[in-house]
Length: 264
Image 1 (cartoon, rainbow, N blue to C red):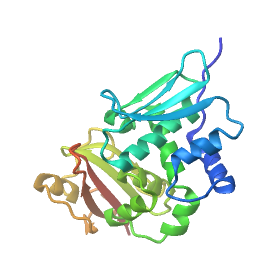
Image 2 (image 1 turned 135 degrees about the vertical axis):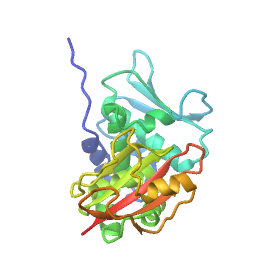
Image 3 (image 1 turned 45 degrees about the vertical axis):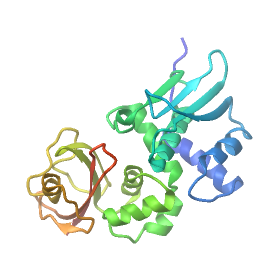
Image 4 (image 1 turned 180 degrees about the vertical axis):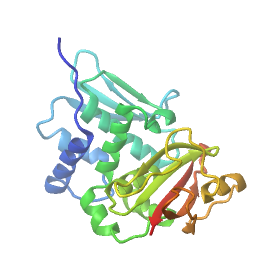
């Protein structure tokens, strides 16, 4: 019996990054189509990968294998108006191809699965996408000295043409500062990410209520966000004070993003 395995997302993302930077145009924002046509089709990768863009009712992105072949196709939904979101979905499906094609023959992704950080496979595809679109060397060189707030988050997103979630996931994962990023909806945490040096956070896991003393909860109740850092005291940790800033997703999905930087 053959054991199905997946490939480490960070290793696979770095593999493609090296090909792009050493043998490709080495330009950013990354051109995913050129990467696929160049790195995948003209190297030692087994199989074939194509991209089709069209109108689909049931998913935002999909990776599907043609039966009894090594041919794969990424399907992208043209109805997604947010091009950065579509771009991240593109990288996410490429992540399934690089990391998970040994597990099954089809991967469908909706808004729910793309934001599901409790599912191992979807989390790995998100990690792959953020590492691929925002290489560590560029992020460190260009943004190592910035403060952590929603304004700087937007700067990173603009530089790499990535969604705020993807930009935050990547920055927080690389940062040596005690920082965190919380995605919430209706006053409840959907998912969170924090750097290695960040302390325990009272509201971090799926289903946690936003802290009563936080600006995040105030912003949710009032419907008004502040992109500038505000002192939230000990709302997120009883021993460490923090600054936080907010940003709302106005695409209709109802997400609220909170950047937290601990001080002291």
